[in-house]
Length: 143
Image (tube, rainbow, N blue to C red; front, side, top):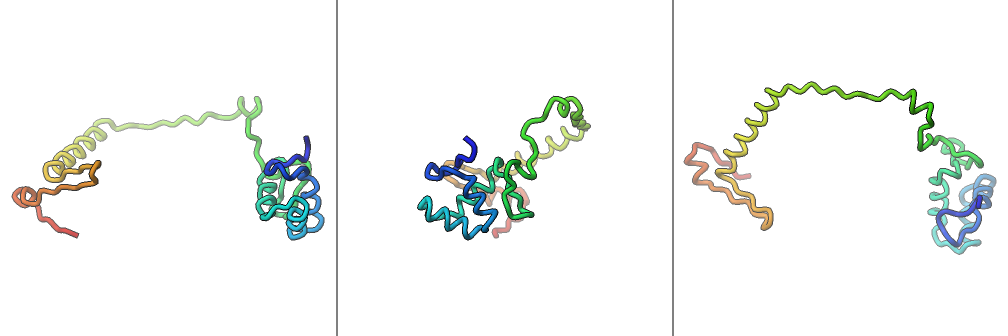
């Protein structure tokens, strides 16, 4: 059913609104929507018509190009595009000894911090043992 509205059951024919918009402008189209369909916010109707790919709204012309969507890439590739499209190959060179060293260092730091700081997520509580930190030689600054 060509011209059937996608946004409102009240609106029966988008083609008429599009024709009025193209010939007389946005203000006249909004007035038409309000008077004909008793819609309180016709701007939304126009925005939905503009976004609908079947309507083909041209931002440059500020009009609907009836019959074909504008500036839209097809959603699916055809068989020729699938055959000719190169598949990007992601090559990652992992330096495993370095990665392992970094993981070990992070683990050591987390273990060191966990001696003095305890997080209890269920109570949203942070417990810090200041005396143990000072005994271990750390300087403590409270912000």
